[in-house]
Amino acid sequence: MHLSHTEGAIYTAFGFYILFSIIISSIAAALTVYVAPGASGSGIPEIMGVLNGVKYPNIFTKRVLIVKIFGVMLAVSGTLCIGKEGPLAHIGAIVAVLCLEAPFGFLAEF
Image 1: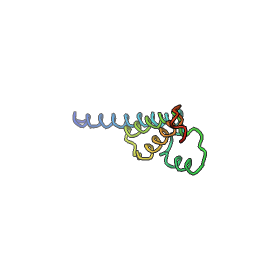
Image 2: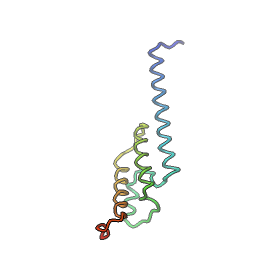
Image 3: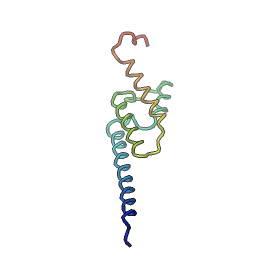
């Protein structure tokens, strides 16, 4: 069976698309598993737990923020079907916590 030039180009493009998706998704997964496991999941259950008094260790750190941002970007680029609202709520909560921990005098009353 001999493929025409057009069919070969389509299979090559589809193969590149699949390979690119696998590589980008694997990088996102590796970042989450090995660098900051606190960045796994959507983040909304963790935020709700913290607001209800549950103590989660290392859930609002700079490392989790960076991995969460890059992990969401890579996962969406890798064509994974993920919701972006939960991770963005977690990112916003981390930024809020880091702002409260910043050495500004006017934030001390919060």
